[in-house]
Length: 346
Ligand code: PEP
Ligand code: MN
Image 1 (cartoon, rainbow, N blue to C red):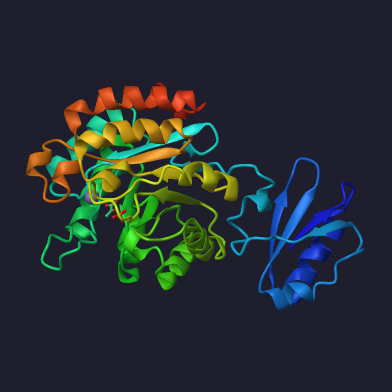
Image 2: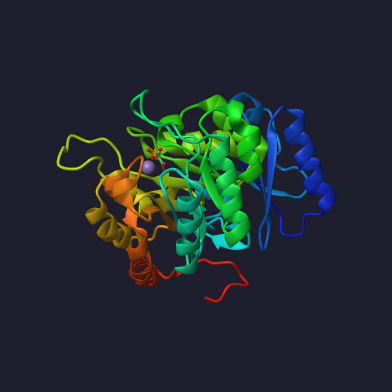
């Protein structure tokens, strides 16, 4: 339920409404608008029914939130998109996040050189996995804490904020030491205990869509994080399973405008894992930027043929600057500019 306060409502009246919401066991989510304050009462149906705020002092009207994902729904922000700020870089609104880096951290040299190349080319954030979800239990599963140390070094050398995956809540402490954004992989999208812990950790999150998840399931998953008070969530479309076998996954680009209708959260696209093939990554990136995505997360490697994992889909680092130029043009078509640190030359 959203409680829309009158334009002349006093702070005391707002506080009284918040106290009433908390008294029935619901959570109050205050969003001060330009003209009026709106307070979301988030809780189960029974709690919210007991509010009895109709006609209370300062209350203009009560508007039900129709979606099951209350905090993720666009309604709670009156259709205003959320703009996140990560290491001085804005993401969302008219700012486009170019998140780039290797699939996995393999060595100090590979990590540092890639970080420098993507930074010089104008990327927003640096990605790299230290904990890797792999289909085969016998495959390389990442360097773990050693990999995290290499990411920390890349951050210290280049100033690039780091995006890295957390698979297991037991690794949360070391991951929090280096991650500016915690990635939740497609396979963990519905790991609700992990989502709750990440919500409590309060660090920005990149939440990837499950391999066979609907947009409603993705939004409900994000709600687990938001509900803990962590508002810095980005959603990521990374390709879904369909009947088509000609390529690895089907990149669902229609998810971008539809998610933007349903939620205020920024929407990022991962063309690398969707395609599984380098030659498709360029065109899909342009399409993602043009369709209005708030960013792209893309894999880049100095020598993809030597990569330990996902070699066939990683962009060649030497080709990355030309790629960025094209993506910037496509983002401009959708009214967005690639986001870099405020102090860096644009
Ligand atoms: C990744 O981005 O490294 C990854 C494994 O992606 P996904 O979870 O989308 O498969
Ligand atoms: Mn990968």
